[in-house]
Image 1: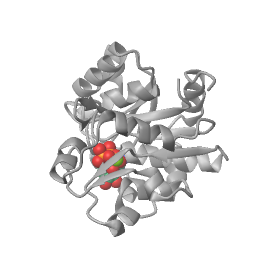
Image 2 (image 1 turned 45 degrees about the vertical axis):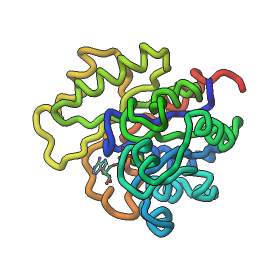
Image 3 (image 1 turned 30 degrees about the vertical axis):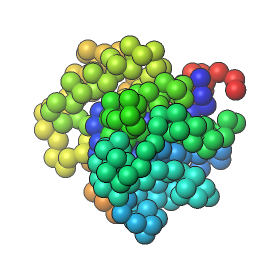
Image 4 (image 1 turned 60 degrees about the horizontal axis):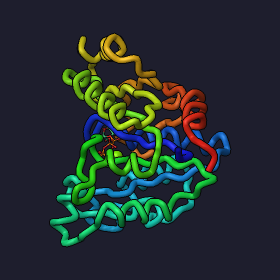
Length: 241
Ligand SMILES: Nc1ncnc2c1ncn2[C@@H]1O[C@H](COP(=O)(O)OP(=O)(O)OP(=O)(O)O)[C@@H](O)[C@H]1O
Ligand SMILES: [Mg+2]
């Protein structure tokens, strides 16, 4: 098992990058040697957007990473579409094998690596190749970021069920409140989820308007995630390299 954390989620826009940025900030503060890889990112029209507004930029800044953007996000596509469709429409052909090799070359085995998927667990990355296949190939344990709005119990249970069926170790769920005024479904999300699934809840992020700005208070946001347990769990699921 690899030395790292694969951040997946129940959907696109659920907060995977926010969680990656919080972890990156915390690891940096704890002098933990780590890297972050976003294998494929769509919706990157130019270098300026990549450097200022991409997932890669957000996590690079939060974790003060010295790697170049090419080392963090090897494949970018201009259109905001699932990677396979975005690649096809930009005339690129990337096979699953090529993607795996690229990512393996970017991983430093002695370091902890945070990898962020694209969209949800079954989002298509390459021909015949989903996010799920990348997690399996890399042998990373998965951290699931879930929205808490109505419908999220279903999405989260489906995601956890599929991870277990594929024997992918699950580090836990982070419940992320992405709307300002939580309704009863959102307030009871964790209670309902844990009634049906024994998964560990690694954190619950409140809605935070600060996240729309360039410099959120990562320190404060980190208090909502059990980073100590996450680190311990990701170490115990990682066999010696
Ligand atoms: N707890 C929160 N409070 C307020 N806004 C949030 C919160 N979590 C996420 N957001 C906002 O929602 C948007 C989507 O979050 P994020 O980029 O982390 O999603 P993602 O899962 O990484 O999406 P993708 O699949 O595109 O990589 C961002 O603008 C982010 O600032
Ligand atoms: Mg993201």
